[in-house]
Structure formats: C-alpha cells, structure tokens
Length: 161
Image (cartoon, rainbow, N blue to C red; front, side, top):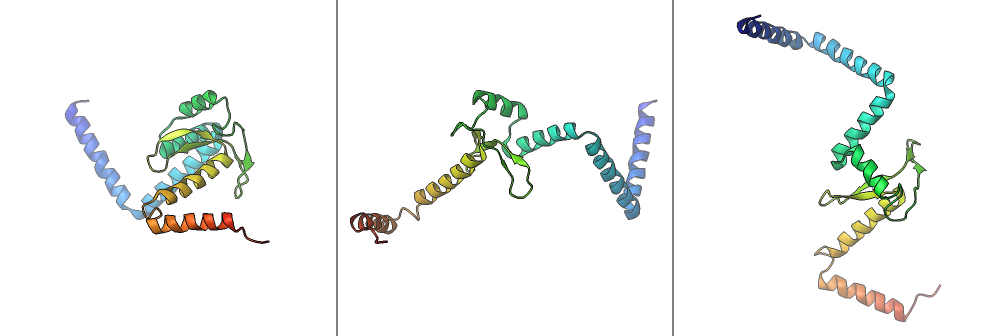
C-alpha cells in the first residue's frame, strides 16, 4: 500500500469516526459497551487490577512506585518507622483492613517513610498544632504573653476539683 493510499484511508477513517461520534445515540451505546468491557475485564482479572490500582494510587498521590514502597518497608523491617509496630485496623466505613501508609509532608509533598495508621494520624495532628503555633498570627506578642501568663497562673494556683 502506497503512502498516498494510507493517508486517504486514515482520512476516511477519521471522517467516519467523527460522523459516528457526532451521533449521540451511537456515542452513548459505544460508551456503555466500553464500560461493560472494562467491568468484565476487572472481574476476570482481579489480581492484575489490584496491582494496577495500587500502582496508580501510589504514583498519583505520592509519586512513588510499589517497588519503592516494598523496598522502604524492607528497610524499616516491615514495621512502622515511629512505633515499630504493624498496627492494622478495620476502616470505619468500608471495613477493609488498613495497614501501613506512606507518610509525606503536605507542604513540600516530600515522602518521608511508612507509618502505621495510628502514628500517621497522630503525626498529622502534631504537625497541624505546630503549624498553628509557628504561624505569625499565633506568635504575636499578645498571644504569647497571654499563653505564658495562663501557664504561670495555673502552675501557681491549680484549679480545685
């Protein structure tokens, strides 16, 4: 097939495709067919899909690969970087087991390590509290003076129970 024939064939195919996709009924049926095929493939290949989903989530959220995650986990001896435990728990809504999580800095998006659910959540709260303390509004002289006065006052005269 000559180059001119290939170009005319491609032009014909483009024109045919554009006409077909302009038809709303055809476009709807084609989208439904593709969705059905994707669902069937996912059902037929659950292991492949789990691996692909894991790879996509790790890459999209943190910019790391499953190989990096596995290597980092091996470097940490398979445990949380802070407490050294392998805390797993059921997710409060889905009931699925939650295991170790990728820890990252929300400001710089830098990945730091792998933590258990408890340490990950607690570290997030600590960072939030520290950010509030270090913010320019919080460190204004009046706030700091009031906070120090408050602490000094209650050290000298504790509350009665």
